Image 1 (cartoon, rainbow, N blue to C red):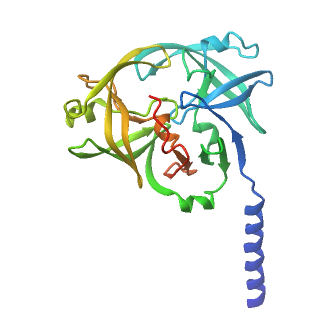
Image 2: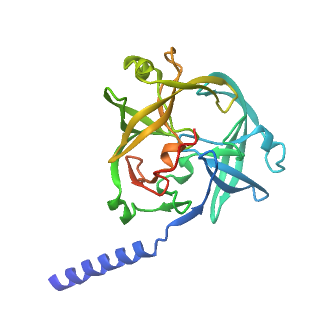
Image 3: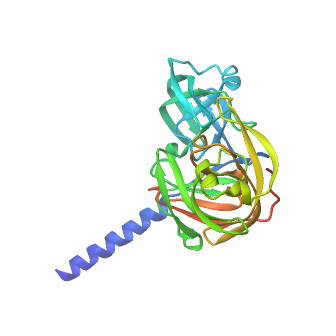
Length: 299
């Protein structure tokens, strides 16, 4: 009886290991644009080819107005009011029951919303929701996204950070060094933002960062609905994410405003410097510095 149980256990273990070995990850190539965005080719409704930005803070699939004019397979069924980070009350058309194809992966009955803007050179965006229940590996060295059914073994060689996942948005804790003080804050992981970092109003005001950091420029940002926001640009002496410290990072903040920018953002100009693994439960992110670590900042 004991031998039978032992053989059964060994068989089950062997079977499980074989199944795990046969589960090949899905590899999706991407283009890293000059604006630090991740652009992926997508087939829409079996007819139209579009390039969508993989936007880690996006909760839906969107296409921009200019690109929509060139598409023959998209049909709108209505409109609704949606909010953007630069303002509210934006009317957006939506289309139901679309098919999306990335490589050999296909999604049916997907809703698509209309936007005014996306990352330059892209037709719209999508978020991690399409990769539900998958561990998402973003390898900037090889320019591929790899989808895993289980956390890959290589994650042991990465720095593990706890995350907060809320309303399709992923936050991680990091530390800013102003030269005179060290301050910890939560940051939204935002591959849709081409810049390096944008600080929230409350964080800036409560720590008087406008007085500590030298403003070197004023820049205009547009959200996806065209709202223009004026941003103060400064240099942050140090920024620590996990075990890695970046120095002299260009950052943005809205000086003198409270409540407009409610969350701090880590953009593509910082994120591209790490190969990233997001676990399937969105509870942890794993980071490893890559070849872009010493690349000059573009923002």
